[in-house]
Length: 482
Image (cartoon, rainbow, N blue to C red; front, top):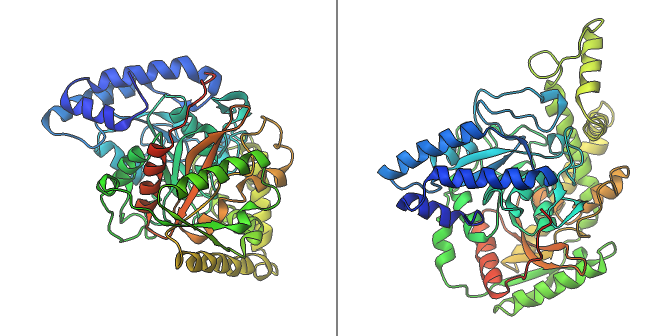
């Protein structure tokens, strides 16, 4: 059974051609065959999957469901009722939520079947899924290379054909960068388009639950199910959700596409640059006008992001103290010792690094010099985009300065790791939608993604261009290694 197209699965289950159980069994069989080499999943409950699939088959007989029987992987920082949600951290190793995230609940209402919880960098802090407390997720195109992060497990589940859909989270590129590394489509929606309720908070003003699929049509299907206002999340937007699939059915008539000159400077791998420039020319041949634009404050983005995100993480992760839930160190000497040892033993090195950076940035005497100034720079970055979108409908850029790097290559050099997000963090700082679409392969057979960015709540613009591009320029895909 083809597990790469959610539309086909949905239609087959709704029509009674196949049962949701047959789909679920095929997905579980693929997971069993491939995941030992890839490490995409942290939690699998096959009996619950099959029980859920049987219930969907019964419901689909009575009325069609938007995602009838479609398997979906859920990143392990998104709460799932009665199913372990660890954030790939020892401090939450045994945590089983009493509720599901709004996005998860909406997917289940639409008939989706959660196939498992996907590995990630601990608390979504990382760009390689090497920071998981439990395992490394490997790239299906080269098992010695990273999957990207932090949503590496979710992306690999889709890339390796274990599920046609997945949810990740994107705080600074955590869906787009692994999507680029693994040759799938990943969309970071506008901040507020999808409820954050049930997403374990990393940086609350940046976090976005984000869909992953093999094509723009399936992204549209998934986004339509999870988008929209939620009373449980005050930051979710009241902006109406369009019918994305209907938008995609309209003929593509060309766009004005901006090319930000700051995204093509020093640090961009020459082979990646060549592939992206070819992709831009391809987009132009679809009847689009290519216009050079400037985003002058891009050079401050990484420094800005790595003040704001750790500061918010420092505040958000204070709740993990061994008192209410999660890991608690055994036999502490007193309350202070319990706090110290619980957090020292429960958090990994990268999480502790970011908590310390964030705590310093928020501390008395330094708040204005760091966090306050960073928020003002964030406003300047947003204004750069506002001005660019007065001239163009969307922007095109690289997703990452390099293809997937070797496992272990950057783990001991945090700055080198942080710089892999240089082209993605600005979309989160500005709150705009952005996506990665497959663009080509290096001579070594490694995928490279093209980033498309649009103005707030213009996800349909991204999807329309992505669909037209994929249909006009299909890629010959190398064979997977697992």
